[in-house]
Image 1: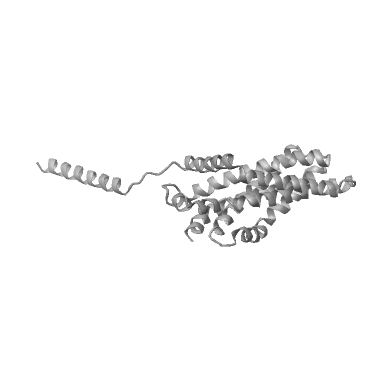
Image 2: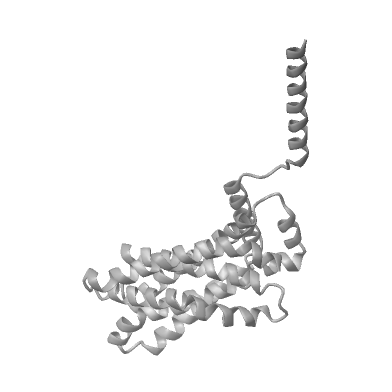
Length: 251
């Protein structure tokens, strides 16, 4: 009788513990599914409005036209400055998109709903970052084609594409984090470039130096250190953003 009583007591304890676990458990969306849903939401919204991508493309086209006309008669100057033109245009066109990354959610009143959703806060960050990255990469590849045509210099090169991807990853990572910091500021469009440019400077310098070495067909000793520095900066920025985003959105 005592053994049967002990087993009944244990069964009751297990059931009580299970009931308590059910009470505190809440539905949580799988991590990468949440990341993909947020990125896809941003892409669908942009496909409908085309407001952001149109402004970025127009800025890119105007910048390429200005530099092309300014350097039309100087082939040597075009060769030496094309990498700088490429990255200046990517950075400033990307700023147009980053400034609207979380600001549009705040303006529509959906930012609080995203923060209260049963997902990890870092999933919100990576969803926004991947959306921004896709926009920046689209602009970067369109820009490379335009520069190839207007400057008569071939920019479609595997190493240059790798540099563009790595530079864009670092730029959009830190840009998404800082745009979430400035989203509640009144002058957020002005504040974001002030916050972003000093932090993203290692990315820009490495990307410009590496791109110049690749376009001038220099040996690997000239572009490999910049490629490694870009990869290292990407890892540092992604890890720091993952660790800090929770505290940033809490503020």
